[in-house]
Every structure is written in structure tokens, then in C-alpha cells.
Amino acid sequence: MAIETGDALPEAKLAKMGADGPEVVDLNALGAGKKLAIFALPGAFTGTCSTAHVPSFIRTIDQFKAKGVDEVICVSVNDVFVMQEWGNQTGATEAGIHMLADGDGSFTKAMGRDFSAPPVGLIDRSKRYAMIVDDGKITALQEEENPGVCDVSGGEALLEAV
Image 1 (cartoon, one colour):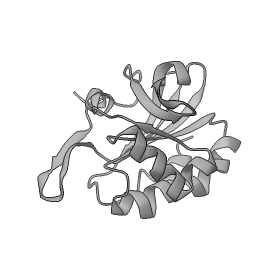
Image 2 (cartoon, one colour):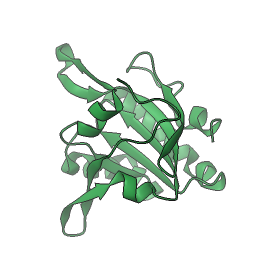
Image 3 (cartoon, one colour):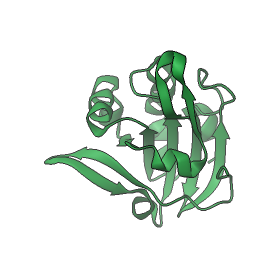
């Protein structure tokens, strides 16, 4: 069953690259008492993710901060090394976006937003969506009908929900 607006964020252990290598990030601990903008997407270095989704949050991160969002987080079912390099190449890391890896897809599955597209090699990946989470509770959730588009889940669209 998919998690919806009004539900609590599921328990999640994600990963990021730290100074000494991969580090576990407890998403619930990170968001305790904070407002988060989280966007999830099918994969690092893929078309729409690289040309539309990530850039939309780079453009709007300052506006999210001005509206009281403490952290902007990108989640993808990729490994921590890929997420680090993708964050560096897109400028997302420099902009202040946390690039978090859901290596085994457990968070994506707990959200009820996993899918596979074998013809393009995407197996057990994340649907494209974005949400606002306030102290662990999802207050807005916007999911794309098609993972190849970035309309309702982009930075500008999510800003309207803050």
C-alpha cells in the first residue's frame, strides 16, 4: 500500500558519501523537528532526472529555504558513489541538495513507489514524486503519472505546496 499525504514518513536508512566514505543517514532522525522537501526519481544520470528534475530544485532551493524548508533531499535507487558523482556533476551538491542513495530500494518500496522498466534497464527503481515532510509527517505529496515527465514533482510545482 502506498504512503499518502497525512501519513508518517516510513523508517528509512539511506546513504551518503562522507569525508571518510559511505555513511548511513537515518532519514527520520534527519527530519525530526524539521521541514523537508524530498524528491525521488528513477535514476541518476537518466534523461529527465538530469535535465529537468534536479535542475528544478537547484533553481528553487533558496525559495524553499525562504519558506521555512530546512533541507532539500534527492533520493534515488542508486549506490552512494553514483549519487555523489551525479550531485557533483549537476551542481546539486554545491547548491546544498542532499543526494541520498536508497541502494536496496527499501525506502522506495516502503513508500509504495517502486516500478520496473526492463526495456531500458530500470529494475526496482523509484517512481518520480516529491513531497513536503514536516517533523516526520507528509503534508504534501505530488507524483507523476509517467516517470518520463517532471511536471507536478518539480521544484516550482512543489513550492506551491509549502
